[in-house]
Length: 395
Image (cartoon, rainbow, N blue to C red):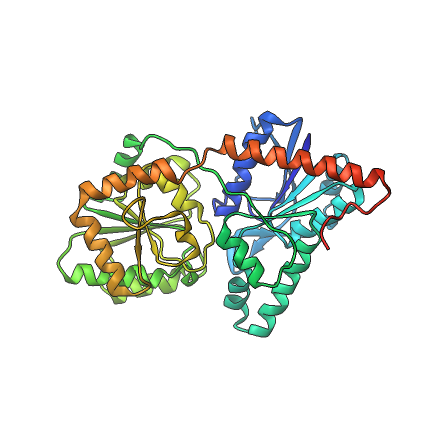
């Protein structure tokens, strides 16, 4: 089987979708005849020694998020020569935009099945940029049109599928979860992190993700402010970068938290990230935007529990007090749950172990199921084509 994974974000940008595609490719590269990742060119991307191939097209940094690249693949002659030489058996679209359109084009041209995975709350992204409900609805229509062209549509969780339904999608949606491989806590990496960020054995709260107001970061900082006012000696590490970084840093300064909160910037080093997860007492991730965040699974893989907002999509995998903690979306309640966690380290450690046992799903198991789905879809498509019908299976 020759597989194409199409994504608008990829390494070394370590956002959730990019990491998902990386794990798909790393596992499929050993199990398939060939696996290709199609994405915009990224600076400092090492391509040697991979078990899969990268077919990238020229791009330029996106002004609102310069870690991301955007381009037009049909205008890149070198890319077109490479992509036209590959005969795929199936294509998987992880982004409904630039590479999504390219996935549609190749799927139609080669008459092969197209899978699309819905990862994100795109309406929220559109609204943050445009501040217009009308323009955001138009953007949503673009997303819907993209998924309507797929032979199968997948979502990474039940709550994610519900978001796509709320957007107006009427076709079948299958839930295919992301994976995470459980690991032993990386004590050496944790010690490196402690020294690098001068944590001094203090309790550590960790946030990993875009520094973006849509992640509900204000809730973290205001909760920490309450705890510091109660004379709690804690540290906070904000790992990532994003369009709200300057404003978030300004809020930290205005709250007098400059000695408490450390910003790492964008992290591409997996060893450093493992060290942060291992060293953290608690991953605090109050996002109401994220559907099935990889960071919660990655923290759990290293036995670090997460604090999430009650009723959020991100909280779907967590039972409060069992394999994670949940709080109402209020500063007072979140601060209270953090205080409980810090006051009950033994119970918190048990919760972390339970998170490790229940939340991660090994990537090998996930990809084995994915490949079975691919095979079934390829067979169905071939059967339909043999009978002279269109291979598009959705209305």
